[in-house]
Image (cartoon, rainbow, N blue to C red; front, side, top):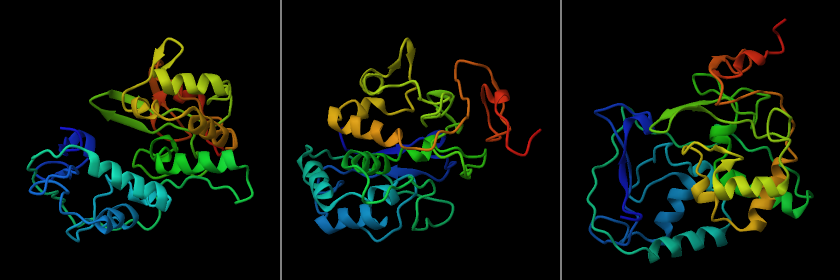
Length: 261
């Protein structure tokens, strides 16, 4: 069933029944998949958020980040998808309570560097953007609205089949991953463990583990350039109210907003 699509459970998509979000069958099956799609159909979906049938794609598909892919990388993705064995898998259509709108800018933008930054850092920035890291790791309030000053500082509470966890602070602050070195960062992404602690399955390390050492080093190099943000988030501790992000997460009581006494 690789690449054959699925109906996303409401708890994952955030779209309640009777509506639904459906991930398309991308295998080369001509009847139920992407076998009749042209290269331009893939490009338009990834660059513009428009499906092969002309509909606006749900924001469950993070095309506003994927559109940053280079032409060469995008072409490689298309070639790879066409190589997946065809699977006949009929799926219903996505049904939303109101029409989706094309996202011109990402809700959680990735902090960018000037073109003159080191090549390794620019490569890491590129990978972090198309990897959609900010959508979970940027600080956001309980309504999902980004909080300025909490970029990559975690705190978003994510609930689903993995349980309830808060995204971690991955800035180079002591409350984030300031104690990581390059070797430790790669080990965490390869093994899914920080020491004896296992990462939640909502963190897609099982995909990232397949990246090359060079790309993982580039991501780490980019993260080290971020502004350190003090925001304590610990999923091993009981959740308490956080005045900084207004969510409830471990060590929330240890964080205070600038306006608080």
